[in-house]
Length: 69
Image 1 (tube, rainbow, N blue to C red):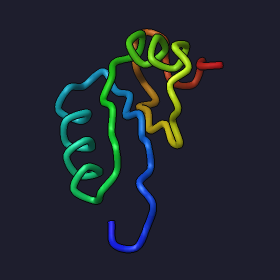
Image 2: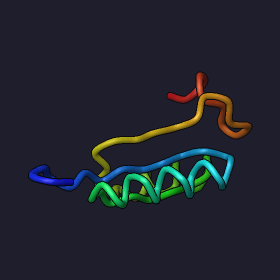
Image 3: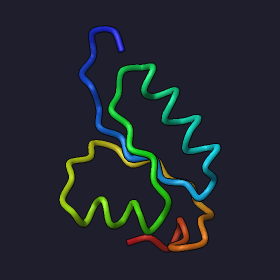
Image 4: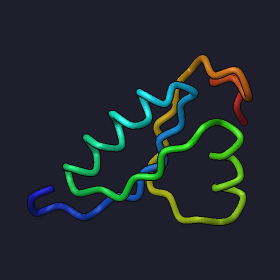
């Protein structure tokens, strides 16, 4: 990303193709990206890892998108 700061992004989706595509695109733009499935993403966040932005699917099986707290 030209002239901007690197953003730490957690990409959460149950579809591995979506995770890989977003991780590739955002990485090319100069961001640090961690692709993860639902439970894996929660574990990552519970570990206290610093994240600036979470991108997530809305219809994931466990836990589902709209029911997240």
